[in-house]
Amino acid sequence: MYDSMTELLRGGGFEKFVDGIIRQSPAKPHAILVLGLNRFRRLNQLLGHEAGDQALIELSKRLRGWLPEGAVAGRLGGDEFAVALPGCSEVDALASAESMLMKLVEGLTIGELEFHLTAGVGVSCYPADGATAAELLRRASAALDHAKQRSGNAVDRSGRTERLLPEERFRLENALRQAMERDELTIRYQPQIDKDGRLQGFEALLSWNSVDLGRVETGTFIQLAEETGAIVNIGLWVLEHACRQVMDWRKAGLDVPRVAVNVSPQQFSSPDFVQTVRSVLETTGLPGQSLELEITESSILQDIEEAARRMAELRSMGVRIAIDDFGVGYSPLAYLHKLPLDVVKVDRSFVGQITKPAGSLPVVHTITVMAHNRGLQVVAEGVETEGELELVLAARCDLVQGYLIGNPMSSEDVAVLMGAPERLAAHAHARPAVHY
Image 1 (cartoon, rainbow, N blue to C red):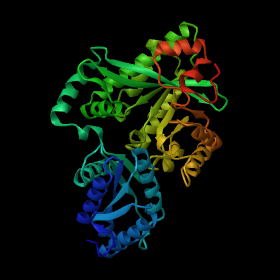
Image 2: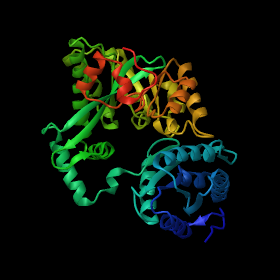
Image 3: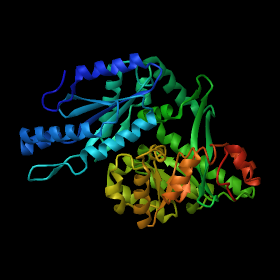
């Protein structure tokens, strides 16, 4: 039942434990984390299998010391470990995965060559990703594969499209191809405010209400669009419409400071992306200073030098550059000084943990200090409670975004709101109120 080297449950024993907690608490959420070391085979080749065993033993010791109350760890084989987190939600599971990475691999060096180890973690959640331990492990392992494609320490969530049946995916792909033609895509705008409650801009968020399928969950269709390549055309559509919308508001006398638009890795890596942005700005007439592009960590880490070059070109047009979901994987921390940036957006998984005992407040504070030292703004996204708002402001975040501040709203609702800003408090029970 137990692995002799690491003293952790073997794979079969771990699966039995997970199936047991599902049977005992079928109505509660549960989570699985699967961790795998990067370049472990290379470690064995350079330093020998004894050094590899030493790394696994040390890792298992750290893992046992990190385990939350009620959690259980197992060794799946080789350099892969698994953790079961009973009663754990998706948000808490992602935060736990980040915490585990920091505790397990930080400062872990092996041998005289100081072979520094990094790792990936894949996350799956019951019941969304499966009803059995085998299903949850399979999906967490698939997420681990994605995490390992990124540099350094990284966390990845089990893909939403992996949960689709083949016939469901086929229908969804066909409907997605027709979504723009049928005018089914909609952009909603979520406000961002500063610490004094003044509006600083909106983030453009895409939604899809299919004639045939009804409302489709955003994460599902975005991932599908990325897998099928449709994300490039969809991303261009969002960019054009968001820029044109800001100009329409301004022509109507509404002073919207800025719009932030998400950019997919495929878009950013496209050879003509910079020219595409330039053309959209020229066509719509929007000044570059009024556009912010949110770029993901995975877009940057594919080629740091090329990413920096493209960012510099975009900034030469006045466009602001933000790293979205900052802190996930901790990889950007090492490369931050190489990138021409304006903004970092603290990932909502940290914001959601900030009010908890031994929560993420120190991490958020570290990010803000580091960003401010480089002259960057910090946006806390996903703020949903007044306690979270109080602490992200205490951590010196510059801008705040989330349901507490304002729900994503239609362009018409934005126009109404800009004409009567006091309605925002009634709209989202926001504190502090927004001043325009």
